[in-house]
Image 1 (cartoon, rainbow, N blue to C red):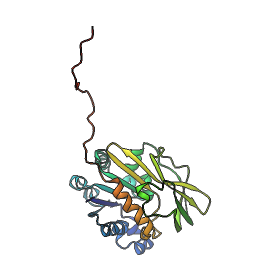
Image 2: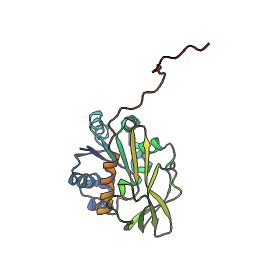
Image 3: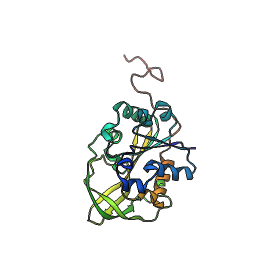
Image 4: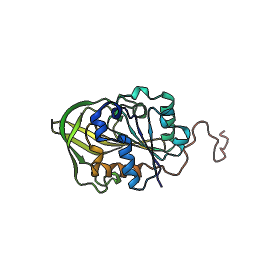
Length: 241
């Protein structure tokens, strides 16, 4: 069974009554609830917990980490980011949601600014499936339509994705690479754009299905990381004359 940890900085829920009303148990609580319903053993972790809730024990018991952050990216300790990165390289899956594009862990794994254009204007968003054979799109129709969302627009300063799964169109005219996969070491990373805190996006059943599919896709492969550095020969090397 795939063990999931849902991480959320949990700051909007404390400061903004609109967000608190939409997500009374926190964004992490809403996401963990539908993942539990799917049968994934799920725990939550938040910024203000000791070690941000991502202790060595928790990380070792996590197969897939789901990450949501926005207001407090800079408050995430570098040593915790380093631990998460090592777990990803070891094989732990990472799903980065919405404004997590600016998180330290995503920027570290991407090696770019991860910057973009944005606007809060109740844009309609249409997420088009551009890789229909991918397991992350299983059970999804040709597109997902959200009546109101925050706009993210190109250029999105990320490396070219290994696979582009979704492309968004917004009512204001912008487009955006909204579902991107990457391989890093033994681990798999999925960035999924929707999920602004003042909209009930994570109650949308198709958005939930994408995240559930992504958890299953990102689960670790049962193998050790390759060994690097100076290597002894596997065969006898003949002396050259």
